[in-house]
Amino acid sequence: MSSLAVNEQPTAAATSTKVIQPAWVRTVHWINAVAMVLMIMSGWQIYNASPLFDFTFSKSITLGGWLGGALLWHFAAMWLLMVNGLVYLALGLATGRFRKKLLPITPEGVIADTRAALTGKLSHADLTKYNYVQKLLYAGIIVVGILVVLSGLAIWKPVQLQYLTALFGGYDFARYVHFFCMAAIVAFLVVHVALALLVPKSLRAMIIGR
Image (cartoon, rainbow, N blue to C red):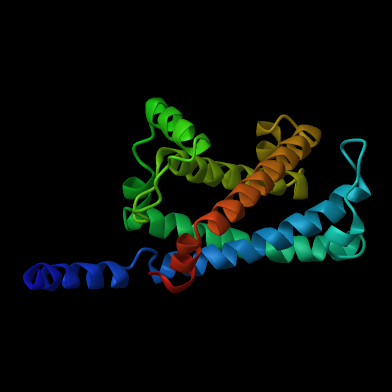
């Protein structure tokens, strides 16, 4: 019994000190979270000035107070998001993190893990590995993030960036793309926060790395 305990001790210690989220991942994650919240709230105020649909967002959840103020917040957060996003993409590719964490993604794996999640049987024991649902969501949100930035630029500078605006089908269609990308990001954030609360150790890992 004593020899077994001795053998298990280093393993337990190694597990408790294992770095799950590197410092650079944690840094860009929290900067991105702040930038995204600022952009969403200011974006809702901008939307209210010229709604696409028959509703507006409550002023209690918008930022800027008026169109001019919202634009200032939106552009400031936009540069923060763009620079931080480029750093994240560059480091994710250079370190091989994207390849290790997000690939492969298979339809069979997504279906199986979705079924397991819906029945409460999806394991969260090993935080170093993403399940197929996580892989799909994280890969998808990267694509959505790129689209929301590009469509935003197309709306911001439709004349100077006319070729980019044309790729989105024109200014009006670019606004719809931007809106639905925003909606997808908000939905992702809701699910992301809910899962972090359901699996607290994942939140701890994103704060202290272990």
